Structures are given as C-alpha cells and as structure tokens.
Length: 226
Image (cartoon, rainbow, N blue to C red; front, side, top):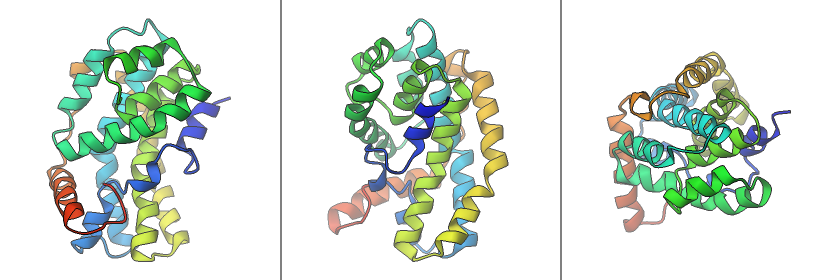
C-alpha cells in the first residue's frame, strides 16, 4: 500500500506547504495568471521545468533510500545546481525543514538521518524521496508525489488569490494527468544514475519572479512566503 506518498501529497500534511504558492502569487500580481486558462498554462509550464527537476531528484532520493544510502551530498549538490534562484532554493529548504519534524515522527530511518547529516535543512523533494523510498515505495511514486505537489500548491493558491472556481481549477489539474505520469516514468528511469545526469530544464521567468517576490515581501505583506 502506497501510504507514504499519499500522505505526503495530502494538503493536510503538516509540512507548511500551504504557505508556498510556487510563484503563483507573483504571477497573479503581474497579471500573468488571471483565469483558469492562464492558470492551466502556468501549471503546465511549472510541471515541465521546476516540477521536472524536483520530481527527478525525488525519484533519485527514493532509489538511494532503498539502497545503500550513499551519495546524499552529491544529490543535494545536484539539486542546488539545478535551482539557480536563491529564493527558490530557500523555499525548497524551508519547506523541507518544516516537514522534517512530522517526517521524523512518522517515518524514522537511517536514510533520513543520512540526508539530514548532509544538510540540516534538506531540500523538500529529497525529503519526500527518502521517506517514500525508505517506506518501500518505488521511485516513480516519489516523482509522482512531488510532481503533483508542484502543480496542486499553485492551483490551491489561485483559488485563494483570484477567487477562481475550485471545480474548474481541479479540472485544470486533472488535465495534467498524462504529463505527470510521463514525468514519473522518466524520473524512475533516471533514478539509479549519476546525479549529474539528471535533467536541468530552465525556467528563467519563474526564477525572476521568485526573486521579485522576496523583494516585494519585504515591502508589503504577502499572503504566501514564495
């Protein structure tokens, strides 16, 4: 039973994911996302770029957790290198740190300890991956979970920020199902390889908006941390 990946992808999981919009708040503020159609385009682009990077890293972490547990420093460095925005790296580690207490309580493991020994604020995709792998689930499950979170978080934020019809927003997320499954399959195929070979699709606009959001957050109160 794939309970770990289901719990981690649940919006009610106490990991602080509700304070992150995945760039949606900044996109909405700039008028780039205004309705369900533009939201769907945003989610699709995010899944293909930042979501792909995160999902492949999560799958690699799941593979490591199910094996010897070696190579965590290399995987952490690989994800850092594929996240050029300092704001995005901070958001990832902030969410990883916020999830750590709940993860330690529910799924303690030697692999988790090894990941945290590398960095006390682990990247969120790696934290998800180590839990899923140590729980006996395949790398594809970790990739699917992280890929889903890459779009479900911004989708939920869009309802709160723009007052969009939640039924229509849910339909937009479900419409990405085939792409999410393809991403999970790709991530699983790459999971056992060299972290240096993981994909690194760029998303300059998401990076710039993440940096801008941090600047604006200092100037006025924003609903989301990222």
